Image 1 (cartoon, rainbow, N blue to C red):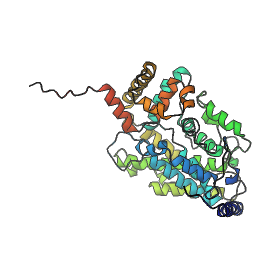
Image 2 (image 1 turned 180 degrees about the vertical axis):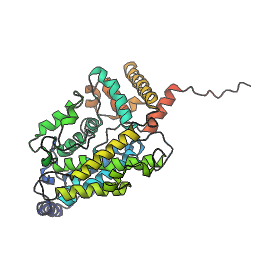
Image 3 (image 1 turned 30 degrees about the horizontal axis):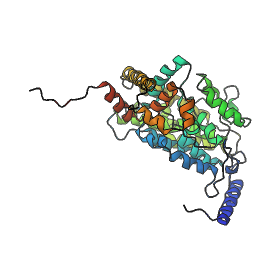
Image 4 (image 1 turned 45 degrees about the horizontal axis):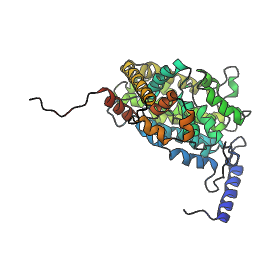
Length: 394
Protein backbone atom coordinates (compact mmCIF):
# COMPACT_ATOMS: atom_id res chain seq x y z
CA UNK A 1 0.00 0.00 0.00
CA UNK A 2 1.18 3.51 -0.83
CA UNK A 3 1.76 5.78 2.14
CA UNK A 4 2.09 9.53 2.31
CA UNK A 5 5.58 10.98 2.69
CA UNK A 6 6.12 11.92 6.35
CA UNK A 7 7.40 15.42 5.57
CA UNK A 8 4.48 16.13 3.24
CA UNK A 9 2.05 14.75 5.82
CA UNK A 10 3.48 17.03 8.52
CA UNK A 11 3.23 20.08 6.27
CA UNK A 12 -0.37 19.29 5.30
CA UNK A 13 -1.36 18.73 8.94
CA UNK A 14 0.09 22.10 9.93
CA UNK A 15 -1.78 23.72 7.04
CA UNK A 16 -5.09 22.12 8.12
CA UNK A 17 -4.63 23.39 11.68
CA UNK A 18 -3.70 26.87 10.47
CA UNK A 19 -6.69 27.11 8.11
CA UNK A 20 -9.11 26.05 10.86
CA UNK A 21 -7.66 28.58 13.32
CA UNK A 22 -7.94 31.37 10.74
CA UNK A 23 -11.30 30.54 9.21
CA UNK A 24 -13.48 28.82 11.78
CA UNK A 25 -15.70 30.35 14.45
CA UNK A 26 -14.09 30.45 17.89
CA UNK A 27 -16.89 28.12 19.07
CA UNK A 28 -16.27 25.57 16.31
CA UNK A 29 -14.92 22.09 17.04
CA UNK A 30 -11.44 21.79 15.55
CA UNK A 31 -10.25 18.57 13.91
CA UNK A 32 -7.24 18.30 16.22
CA UNK A 33 -9.62 18.20 19.21
CA UNK A 34 -11.41 15.04 18.05
CA UNK A 35 -11.78 12.54 20.91
CA UNK A 36 -11.57 8.78 20.35
CA UNK A 37 -12.26 5.97 22.79
CA UNK A 38 -9.49 3.85 21.26
CA UNK A 39 -5.96 5.06 20.40
CA UNK A 40 -6.17 6.99 17.16
CA UNK A 41 -3.55 8.33 14.79
CA UNK A 42 -4.53 11.66 13.25
CA UNK A 43 -5.08 11.56 9.50
CA UNK A 44 -2.79 14.36 8.38
CA UNK A 45 -4.20 14.76 4.89
CA UNK A 46 -7.92 15.05 5.50
CA UNK A 47 -8.27 15.60 9.26
CA UNK A 48 -9.93 13.49 11.91
CA UNK A 49 -13.57 14.28 11.16
CA UNK A 50 -13.15 13.77 7.43
CA UNK A 51 -11.52 10.45 8.31
CA UNK A 52 -14.71 9.67 10.27
CA UNK A 53 -16.71 10.33 7.11
CA UNK A 54 -14.60 7.74 5.28
CA UNK A 55 -15.25 5.20 8.02
CA UNK A 56 -19.00 5.81 7.82
CA UNK A 57 -19.47 5.73 4.05
CA UNK A 58 -17.47 2.51 3.74
CA UNK A 59 -19.80 0.56 6.03
CA UNK A 60 -22.42 -1.88 4.76
CA UNK A 61 -24.96 0.02 6.85
CA UNK A 62 -24.32 3.14 4.74
CA UNK A 63 -24.77 1.16 1.51
CA UNK A 64 -28.17 -0.04 2.74
CA UNK A 65 -29.46 3.53 3.00
CA UNK A 66 -30.54 3.39 -0.63
CA UNK A 67 -32.93 0.52 0.07
CA UNK A 68 -34.58 2.00 3.15
CA UNK A 69 -37.80 3.97 3.41
CA UNK A 70 -37.83 7.64 4.32
CA UNK A 71 -41.61 8.19 4.72
CA UNK A 72 -43.43 6.36 1.92
CA UNK A 73 -42.81 2.63 1.67
CA UNK A 74 -43.89 -0.04 -0.81
CA UNK A 75 -44.68 2.47 -3.56
CA UNK A 76 -43.84 2.04 -7.25
CA UNK A 77 -42.33 5.47 -7.86
CA UNK A 78 -38.64 6.11 -8.52
CA UNK A 79 -38.95 9.78 -7.53
CA UNK A 80 -39.77 9.12 -3.88
CA UNK A 81 -37.11 9.99 -1.32
CA UNK A 82 -35.10 7.13 0.15
CA UNK A 83 -33.12 7.27 3.38
CA UNK A 84 -29.96 7.57 1.26
CA UNK A 85 -31.13 10.73 -0.48
CA UNK A 86 -32.32 12.13 2.84
CA UNK A 87 -28.89 11.97 4.52
CA UNK A 88 -27.31 13.62 1.46
CA UNK A 89 -29.83 16.46 1.65
CA UNK A 90 -29.17 16.87 5.38
CA UNK A 91 -25.43 17.00 4.76
CA UNK A 92 -25.76 19.63 2.03
CA UNK A 93 -28.06 21.89 4.05
CA UNK A 94 -26.02 21.55 7.24
CA UNK A 95 -22.72 22.24 5.46
CA UNK A 96 -24.18 25.36 3.85
CA UNK A 97 -25.27 26.68 7.25
CA UNK A 98 -22.01 25.58 8.89
CA UNK A 99 -19.84 27.21 6.22
CA UNK A 100 -21.76 30.49 6.47
CA UNK A 101 -21.50 30.60 10.26
CA UNK A 102 -17.89 29.37 10.43
CA UNK A 103 -18.28 25.85 11.79
CA UNK A 104 -16.45 22.63 10.94
CA UNK A 105 -17.94 21.19 7.73
CA UNK A 106 -16.11 17.87 8.10
CA UNK A 107 -17.69 17.22 11.50
CA UNK A 108 -21.08 18.33 10.17
CA UNK A 109 -20.78 15.95 7.21
CA UNK A 110 -19.80 12.98 9.39
CA UNK A 111 -22.76 13.50 11.75
CA UNK A 112 -25.15 14.05 8.83
CA UNK A 113 -24.15 10.96 6.88
CA UNK A 114 -24.13 8.71 9.94
CA UNK A 115 -27.20 9.94 11.78
CA UNK A 116 -29.73 7.46 10.30
CA UNK A 117 -27.61 4.30 10.00
CA UNK A 118 -29.81 2.69 12.66
CA UNK A 119 -33.09 3.27 10.86
CA UNK A 120 -35.17 0.17 10.23
CA UNK A 121 -36.95 -1.06 7.11
CA UNK A 122 -40.15 0.98 6.57
CA UNK A 123 -38.78 4.01 8.42
CA UNK A 124 -40.49 5.22 11.58
CA UNK A 125 -43.23 2.63 11.20
CA UNK A 126 -40.60 -0.09 11.41
CA UNK A 127 -38.96 1.64 14.34
CA UNK A 128 -42.24 1.70 16.25
CA UNK A 129 -42.94 -1.94 15.39
CA UNK A 130 -39.57 -3.06 16.76
CA UNK A 131 -39.97 -0.91 19.86
CA UNK A 132 -43.38 -2.47 20.54
CA UNK A 133 -41.58 -5.80 20.70
CA UNK A 134 -38.51 -4.81 22.68
CA UNK A 135 -40.23 -2.67 25.30
CA UNK A 136 -41.74 -5.88 26.64
CA UNK A 137 -38.31 -6.81 27.96
CA UNK A 138 -37.28 -3.28 29.00
CA UNK A 139 -35.34 -2.32 25.90
CA UNK A 140 -36.45 0.81 24.04
CA UNK A 141 -35.47 0.85 20.39
CA UNK A 142 -34.52 4.28 19.02
CA UNK A 143 -32.87 4.73 15.64
CA UNK A 144 -30.55 7.47 16.91
CA UNK A 145 -29.09 5.15 19.56
CA UNK A 146 -29.02 2.25 17.10
CA UNK A 147 -26.97 4.39 14.70
CA UNK A 148 -24.38 4.87 17.43
CA UNK A 149 -24.58 1.20 18.35
CA UNK A 150 -23.79 0.18 14.76
CA UNK A 151 -20.67 2.34 14.61
CA UNK A 152 -19.45 1.80 18.16
CA UNK A 153 -20.56 -1.63 19.36
CA UNK A 154 -21.24 -3.67 16.24
CA UNK A 155 -18.70 -2.44 13.68
CA UNK A 156 -16.14 -1.07 16.18
CA UNK A 157 -15.50 1.74 13.69
CA UNK A 158 -13.73 3.97 16.25
CA UNK A 159 -15.55 7.12 15.18
CA UNK A 160 -14.91 10.26 17.25
CA UNK A 161 -17.10 10.99 20.26
CA UNK A 162 -18.12 14.33 18.76
CA UNK A 163 -19.62 12.47 15.78
CA UNK A 164 -21.28 9.82 17.95
CA UNK A 165 -22.70 12.56 20.19
CA UNK A 166 -24.16 14.48 17.24
CA UNK A 167 -25.76 11.30 15.93
CA UNK A 168 -27.20 10.37 19.33
CA UNK A 169 -28.61 13.86 19.92
CA UNK A 170 -30.32 14.38 16.56
CA UNK A 171 -33.54 12.66 17.67
CA UNK A 172 -36.77 14.09 18.98
CA UNK A 173 -38.39 15.34 15.79
CA UNK A 174 -39.48 18.79 16.87
CA UNK A 175 -39.02 22.27 15.50
CA UNK A 176 -39.29 23.64 19.05
CA UNK A 177 -35.55 23.44 19.61
CA UNK A 178 -35.10 26.71 21.52
CA UNK A 179 -35.30 26.88 25.30
CA UNK A 180 -38.94 27.72 26.00
CA UNK A 181 -37.98 29.58 29.19
CA UNK A 182 -35.31 31.63 27.42
CA UNK A 183 -36.38 31.87 23.77
CA UNK A 184 -33.91 34.68 23.15
CA UNK A 185 -30.99 32.34 23.77
CA UNK A 186 -31.62 30.22 20.72
CA UNK A 187 -30.27 26.70 20.38
CA UNK A 188 -26.81 26.10 21.89
CA UNK A 189 -24.61 23.09 22.57
CA UNK A 190 -23.82 21.72 25.99
CA UNK A 191 -20.13 22.61 26.21
CA UNK A 192 -19.93 21.06 29.67
CA UNK A 193 -20.62 17.56 28.41
CA UNK A 194 -17.78 15.14 29.10
CA UNK A 195 -16.75 12.08 27.13
CA UNK A 196 -18.29 9.74 29.67
CA UNK A 197 -21.61 11.60 29.40
CA UNK A 198 -21.74 10.93 25.64
CA UNK A 199 -21.63 7.17 26.17
CA UNK A 200 -23.93 7.29 29.18
CA UNK A 201 -26.57 9.29 27.26
CA UNK A 202 -26.41 6.93 24.31
CA UNK A 203 -26.77 3.81 26.44
CA UNK A 204 -29.57 5.39 28.47
CA UNK A 205 -31.67 5.74 25.28
CA UNK A 206 -32.24 1.99 25.35
CA UNK A 207 -33.34 2.14 29.02
CA UNK A 208 -35.45 5.31 29.17
CA UNK A 209 -38.16 5.90 26.56
CA UNK A 210 -37.89 9.68 26.98
CA UNK A 211 -34.10 9.98 27.23
CA UNK A 212 -33.54 11.42 23.75
CA UNK A 213 -35.99 14.27 24.30
CA UNK A 214 -33.64 16.11 26.66
CA UNK A 215 -30.30 15.39 24.97
CA UNK A 216 -28.37 18.37 23.59
CA UNK A 217 -25.27 18.03 21.36
CA UNK A 218 -21.83 18.90 22.73
CA UNK A 219 -20.92 20.91 19.59
CA UNK A 220 -22.46 23.63 17.46
CA UNK A 221 -21.91 21.30 14.53
CA UNK A 222 -24.24 18.77 16.15
CA UNK A 223 -26.83 21.49 16.75
CA UNK A 224 -26.67 22.63 13.13
CA UNK A 225 -27.12 19.06 11.88
CA UNK A 226 -30.18 18.51 14.09
CA UNK A 227 -31.89 21.62 12.74
CA UNK A 228 -30.87 20.72 9.18
CA UNK A 229 -32.44 17.28 9.58
CA UNK A 230 -35.78 19.00 10.14
CA UNK A 231 -35.26 21.43 7.28
CA UNK A 232 -34.31 18.63 4.90
CA UNK A 233 -37.48 16.59 5.13
CA UNK A 234 -40.33 18.98 5.93
CA UNK A 235 -40.54 20.28 2.35
CA UNK A 236 -39.29 17.11 0.68
CA UNK A 237 -42.06 15.02 2.27
CA UNK A 238 -44.58 17.49 0.86
CA UNK A 239 -43.04 17.05 -2.62
CA UNK A 240 -43.24 13.26 -2.29
CA UNK A 241 -46.89 13.50 -1.28
CA UNK A 242 -47.56 15.52 -4.44
CA UNK A 243 -45.71 12.95 -6.58
CA UNK A 244 -47.95 10.22 -5.18
CA UNK A 245 -51.14 12.20 -5.72
CA UNK A 246 -51.78 12.42 -2.00
CA UNK A 247 -51.72 16.23 -2.03
CA UNK A 248 -51.72 19.11 -4.49
CA UNK A 249 -49.35 22.07 -4.28
CA UNK A 250 -52.37 24.33 -3.92
CA UNK A 251 -53.26 22.51 -0.67
CA UNK A 252 -50.43 24.27 1.16
CA UNK A 253 -51.88 27.10 3.30
CA UNK A 254 -51.21 30.66 2.11
CA UNK A 255 -49.56 31.77 5.38
CA UNK A 256 -46.89 29.09 4.89
CA UNK A 257 -46.39 29.79 1.16
CA UNK A 258 -46.03 33.53 1.74
CA UNK A 259 -43.10 33.02 4.12
CA UNK A 260 -41.38 29.84 2.94
CA UNK A 261 -42.57 29.25 -0.62
CA UNK A 262 -44.42 26.24 -1.98
CA UNK A 263 -41.59 24.16 -3.51
CA UNK A 264 -38.99 22.21 -1.57
CA UNK A 265 -36.07 24.20 -2.97
CA UNK A 266 -37.76 27.44 -1.91
CA UNK A 267 -38.60 26.06 1.54
CA UNK A 268 -35.04 24.84 2.15
CA UNK A 269 -33.52 28.13 1.04
CA UNK A 270 -35.94 30.23 3.07
CA UNK A 271 -35.22 28.28 6.25
CA UNK A 272 -31.47 28.16 5.58
CA UNK A 273 -31.18 31.87 4.82
CA UNK A 274 -33.34 32.79 7.82
CA UNK A 275 -31.20 30.88 10.30
CA UNK A 276 -28.03 32.35 8.77
CA UNK A 277 -29.47 35.89 8.87
CA UNK A 278 -30.50 35.55 12.49
CA UNK A 279 -27.50 33.58 13.80
CA UNK A 280 -24.54 35.24 12.05
CA UNK A 281 -22.12 36.64 14.61
CA UNK A 282 -24.28 35.52 17.54
CA UNK A 283 -23.96 32.97 20.34
CA UNK A 284 -26.71 30.52 19.45
CA UNK A 285 -28.79 29.43 16.48
CA UNK A 286 -31.93 31.44 15.77
CA UNK A 287 -34.92 31.66 13.45
CA UNK A 288 -36.96 34.81 13.06
CA UNK A 289 -40.37 34.67 14.76
CA UNK A 290 -42.16 34.79 11.39
CA UNK A 291 -40.10 31.95 9.90
CA UNK A 292 -40.28 29.83 13.04
CA UNK A 293 -44.07 30.07 13.09
CA UNK A 294 -44.29 29.13 9.39
CA UNK A 295 -41.91 26.21 10.01
CA UNK A 296 -44.11 24.93 12.83
CA UNK A 297 -47.23 25.38 10.71
CA UNK A 298 -45.67 23.33 7.90
CA UNK A 299 -44.86 20.54 10.33
CA UNK A 300 -48.44 20.57 11.63
CA UNK A 301 -49.72 20.47 8.05
CA UNK A 302 -47.50 17.47 7.23
CA UNK A 303 -48.50 15.53 10.33
CA UNK A 304 -52.18 16.03 9.63
CA UNK A 305 -52.08 15.43 5.89
CA UNK A 306 -49.13 13.05 5.39
CA UNK A 307 -47.79 11.23 8.42
CA UNK A 308 -51.21 10.53 9.98
CA UNK A 309 -53.07 10.30 6.68
CA UNK A 310 -55.11 7.04 6.50
CA UNK A 311 -53.54 6.35 3.09
CA UNK A 312 -50.02 6.22 4.55
CA UNK A 313 -51.20 4.21 7.55
CA UNK A 314 -53.35 1.68 5.69
CA UNK A 315 -50.86 -1.21 5.99
CA UNK A 316 -49.52 -0.37 9.45
CA UNK A 317 -51.11 -3.35 11.23
CA UNK A 318 -49.91 -5.74 8.55
CA UNK A 319 -46.34 -4.43 8.78
CA UNK A 320 -46.43 -4.64 12.58
CA UNK A 321 -47.52 -8.25 12.27
CA UNK A 322 -44.67 -8.97 9.85
CA UNK A 323 -42.10 -7.63 12.31
CA UNK A 324 -43.56 -9.75 15.12
CA UNK A 325 -43.49 -12.91 13.01
CA UNK A 326 -39.90 -12.41 11.83
CA UNK A 327 -38.67 -11.48 15.31
CA UNK A 328 -40.02 -14.76 16.73
CA UNK A 329 -38.68 -16.73 13.77
CA UNK A 330 -35.10 -15.47 14.16
CA UNK A 331 -35.16 -15.76 17.94
CA UNK A 332 -36.25 -19.40 17.65
CA UNK A 333 -33.56 -20.00 15.02
CA UNK A 334 -30.92 -18.88 17.50
CA UNK A 335 -32.39 -20.90 20.36
CA UNK A 336 -32.61 -23.99 18.14
CA UNK A 337 -29.15 -23.48 16.66
CA UNK A 338 -30.59 -23.38 13.13
CA UNK A 339 -27.45 -22.30 11.29
CA UNK A 340 -29.24 -22.48 7.94
CA UNK A 341 -31.11 -19.34 9.00
CA UNK A 342 -29.93 -16.09 7.43
CA UNK A 343 -29.47 -14.57 10.87
CA UNK A 344 -26.39 -16.73 11.32
CA UNK A 345 -24.75 -14.98 8.36
CA UNK A 346 -25.10 -11.78 10.38
CA UNK A 347 -24.01 -13.30 13.69
CA UNK A 348 -20.96 -15.02 12.25
CA UNK A 349 -19.86 -11.85 10.45
CA UNK A 350 -19.50 -10.03 13.75
CA UNK A 351 -16.71 -10.13 16.30
CA UNK A 352 -16.23 -12.81 18.92
CA UNK A 353 -16.91 -10.16 21.57
CA UNK A 354 -20.26 -9.33 19.95
CA UNK A 355 -21.26 -12.98 19.78
CA UNK A 356 -20.34 -13.62 23.41
CA UNK A 357 -21.77 -10.46 24.99
CA UNK A 358 -24.97 -9.84 23.02
CA UNK A 359 -28.26 -11.37 24.09
CA UNK A 360 -30.12 -13.34 21.39
CA UNK A 361 -33.04 -10.87 21.60
CA UNK A 362 -30.72 -7.96 20.78
CA UNK A 363 -28.98 -9.90 18.01
CA UNK A 364 -32.37 -10.31 16.35
CA UNK A 365 -33.11 -6.60 16.73
CA UNK A 366 -29.70 -5.66 15.27
CA UNK A 367 -30.29 -7.99 12.32
CA UNK A 368 -33.81 -6.83 11.48
CA UNK A 369 -33.01 -3.14 12.00
CA UNK A 370 -30.16 -3.39 9.51
CA UNK A 371 -32.31 -4.79 6.70
CA UNK A 372 -33.44 -2.92 3.62
CA UNK A 373 -37.17 -2.91 2.88
CA UNK A 374 -36.73 -5.35 0.01
CA UNK A 375 -34.60 -7.82 1.98
CA UNK A 376 -37.08 -7.80 4.86
CA UNK A 377 -40.00 -8.49 2.50
CA UNK A 378 -38.03 -11.24 0.78
CA UNK A 379 -37.21 -12.91 4.09
CA UNK A 380 -40.84 -12.66 5.19
CA UNK A 381 -42.20 -14.12 1.96
CA UNK A 382 -39.65 -16.94 2.03
CA UNK A 383 -40.79 -17.83 5.54
CA UNK A 384 -44.58 -17.56 5.25
CA UNK A 385 -45.31 -18.30 1.59
CA UNK A 386 -45.61 -21.92 0.37
CA UNK A 387 -43.02 -23.00 -2.16
CA UNK A 388 -43.95 -24.50 -5.53
CA UNK A 389 -42.89 -28.13 -5.84
CA UNK A 390 -42.98 -27.95 -9.64
CA UNK A 391 -45.45 -30.85 -9.88
CA UNK A 392 -47.97 -31.17 -12.70
CA UNK A 393 -51.27 -32.49 -11.34
CA UNK A 394 -52.91 -32.96 -14.75
